[in-house]
Image (cartoon, rainbow, N blue to C red; front, side, top):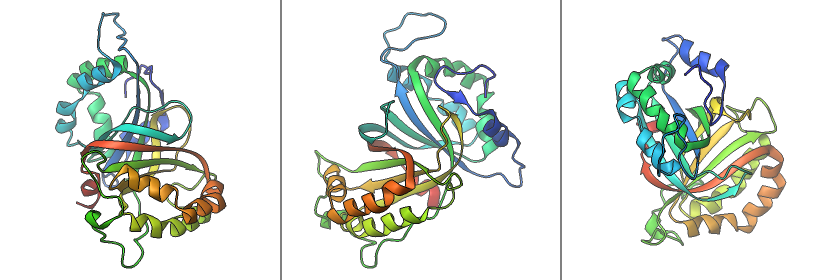
Length: 276
């Protein structure tokens, strides 16, 4: 990471050191999950005049050359359609990049072309959270529902309401809960699974957060990506009485802080990046 503190978040230098010094024999892939909030108009530190929006400046930043050079690749990008839970900021875009090793993330920061393009990210980004994540197991679907075809669900995808990804960023009450799921959350998942499966919900990837390289000082434990055939399907699950009861009895007791967002994907090979 640059020695200069970015304007868009706090750098966790302890986690940065872990990324840089993980022994090669213990190193392996890491998924960097990015929550992005843009400036209305880009603000370059060199004072240049611009008409670019913050998102347009970030599009200029997109460091594909640097990512390719270290063997990394974007595996998910999407625009936030609606943020349902979580206080400010209201996030604009979600991105996930898979790096072949933790060290490769740090190595990319020192590449000249990356440092040049980073001026665009600094200009466009108002705030970001970047979490280093590892895949974790998730519950299997109830018997007889695992392979429900989206053409057979009550609210299939349409041209006007296509598939959505629902993202949950979670901090549990248990400070050691990154690689486990607390009992109350497990009870909620069991109660909600039947309704979710009936409506064609698929797990695209559940991740344990091993560290937040850039953020606002908060600690996060898990990031969950659940795929729905449509926004209508999501709303049907959300309003299911059994799920609502389980949410009150269990989910709310397990979670200390969260963001929940409906995201419209523009790139989605997340599941393949985990299982492939």
